[in-house]
Length: 324
Image (cartoon, rainbow, N blue to C red):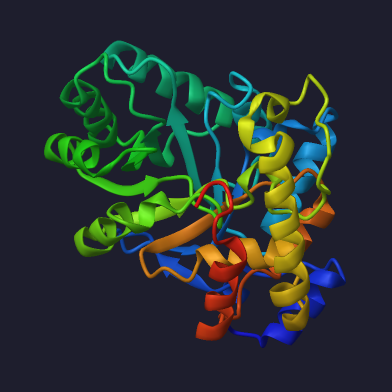
């Protein structure tokens, strides 16, 4: 960093603008691209903005603070997220690493149509990273990746990636086209990638772009045991957010806040996000925000490291909790 952590956080707290040089960066796989270790994710939390001007303010707040990487997808609101990002990037596209995804239908024909739709919505002639959103299986991955590679060769994207793939799926994709990164779910409760995926990615030079670091809000500390989500909230249908299971998670989250985060001067959100960055294979962590204030809070999730005893304490608190 070109400024100290205290200076950085002081500038953030004051709401002042920072250049991207003030942020720590990591290489995205073996691309040679240095990206800020926190990425503004334009998914479900971004879509919570009912007023578009508030959504655009949040994107611009992230860019003002120095974040140089935005991640979106057609599937986020069926193009709504991409349209908002495109509007926010008017006059600001230069220097921003822009990523989006093709979702739902992975036939070669749809992939091409989806790219053209995304470029129109994003108001740009290319994206920096184009990703297959998830493993679908009905279309041979070789066909899908051949279509992705054709778009790369045409200059419509600079790099290719995949999201929510396992190691055999990544190997199949890489045999057909040069993928540079994987975007998997990873957080304190969902650590499946540690066994095989993260070591493979580190060994093969595939960058990891972590999504869902807060486990859909379970790691924010905002919900006490017994909290009931309304029917129109998707979490009301997830077993993790019900009954005794959620009570154990909420209680563990409170212990993490009191016993690990607060002694370090961190919020639980900052602890949960920063914890994901401890893996060498992780290039960036995607964080969403439903207010400019949350963007500022996320800024404090970098610039520090957890000691071995703190990591052991975290594991002890979470032992036996659902998701481990």
